[in-house]
Image (cartoon, rainbow, N blue to C red; front, side):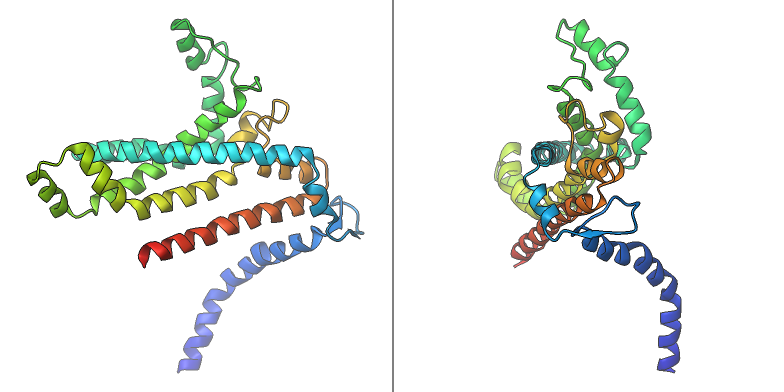
Length: 288
């Protein structure tokens, strides 16, 4: 009987397992192999070059620039969205009647299609008809050409990144705050503790595991950014928004350097793996 149940179980998971092997496991291993070759994706012959792609990668000024851009983007989006998400979640806790409506509003950018979001933000950042520059000119402030100016293109895509990430932070923080022990805050009210003191000495320490989760997942998500930067600026102007994932795309599918692009992908994978391991370690220490 047990053997029959086991066979049935294997039979049921076989389609999903085959899809995983064909579309995830095999490409994963294959990309590692071609990262040690020089291959344009068209020629049947793949020339083995050893670690040359990885050595060349860290000598590439454009790759170093992409690391810098990715770091600025990742740190800015993650930290700002985390701080704003915490503050907004605090306000929603005080307005419990309408919190569900506001949660839906703040979470909607997370599930908005990247193409639709990019089209809207292109219109908003337009130097002639965009509402942002129209508002700045009405206030007699300089209205930059957001997506075409090397000084403003990266801040522009960071704004979009914060907009897309903020809803996740709000929802996670709101869920965490709703599970905090009410008795502790009631006791603090009886002792005359001010609102700011409760936030500083009670809410923030109690929410530390949630903050760790939001920060680590935020870093992992932001370091892989591709869609809205590709749609808004394509890495320009002059590489000012050329993040690592976009650099990988350009090397692999525009310049047909698939071996080099695979080396970039594995470098990016190593960074993400390191952040994931760090998350596990921090969570284990928090639980202990």
